[in-house]
Length: 610
Image (cartoon, rainbow, N blue to C red; front, side, top):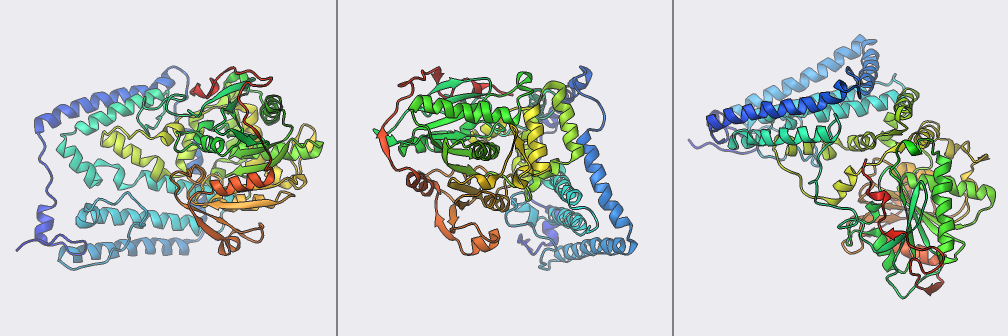
């Protein structure tokens, strides 16, 4: 009798034979196993090197200690109510009994619906064997039942304080992602087939790359997300023509070459985040927001922040405002003769810009006539999963690490951002690179993502405490330069862009922050996330955006009445900018006035790697 191989029916013959897997060459397998152990030794040595050299402490890290402490509080909450513990155990037991019963029925040839099915967006279980093979199907469903049960336990721990509960939910997601059967050769059908077919050569290649990446991370894993050597800043990234026209200890200011015979009279100043490098807005000619803005007739200036080291340890948030934004405004006026600009702030660059606007309102400085905020928070009430890393104990730990050397390593922030989406930004690369032994595809966005920057101690401490921990800007309690800041005094027009799937500056947080300003705010919601929602090029637009007049009520009610427009928001923003200041003048060439070029764009600061 011929076996049927369908999702719902598995015959005895199918179970006995299983999917046809290649027979390994035992001699080659043995040889590769020896090579694997050799490469594993190199990876272990690279990981232990910082401890041996006294650059790192042995033992359990503070991060792991916090995970144990946080989850312990949830366990303690459940242990206080034995009846709830019994109900929870019963729920898990029932799930496994249903799974076992369904598996036995499948083994007898019956069609059965899964007890636990993956989310349709979950890419981990797309290999057909996860459904067709009863063993892998059982492993998959057992994993889903267990992790969802654990997530429910945390979600239903009503007696735990909100911050601890939020941390526990986050940590459970991280653990669940790490323990997925897709991450192990023995429980991943695709990895098993690859390993048998290649006689383990894939594991040798992967372990070699793992050792290299631990060495590159100076004892910690610097996750390989793209091919090294494919991209070079100033060669095939950040190539929009321009000149560095000003430089100080914190910034280089780039003025871009005009692309039109006439330009808008009011210049544009871009304030990117210093947590990342500015060329996310200038990845390549097709994706470059900066190149596009130049093509629309804007005189574009962009701040390129220094990648700080111990020399910038004492540079404060106020220094970043004065030596960053204010110094740039002075330079723009010298370069163009214009006393007012329109400004863009991206992420934390937008938070700094908002702080500067509040300070300028307090002292009567009107050099910024309108402002745009890209995925920016000014009210941190709904700050999302990054707030997991922010409480007094954790900030004190970060401060101790920063003050020991004057800055926070860029890898710390990169790891935090990756942890927001572990199933997209961590484990696929672990599987494909270190287990399949495949070099990742060259991808400019992931190269930028890995080009991390350091955080100066004084600045980062102020930001974490005043924004994430105490929310002082939204409360009107932040003080800069002897002035208490009040965003309600900011009366200039604001274009406030949020992204619907943003994990860093959630759309709900940006919406709430829009109500903090005292002037007209145009709230626009882009499709996708923190990066793709912003970098949505006009030449090949994806996603969509929503608009709906005044910022009133809740985000949900605003969105219910919003107009959805396919494609990118870029032209909508350009029309808003042009409406603010429609006057045109002859195009301005960098260096044509008092500021002479120091070097070609993208400058020198952006090329310093952490």
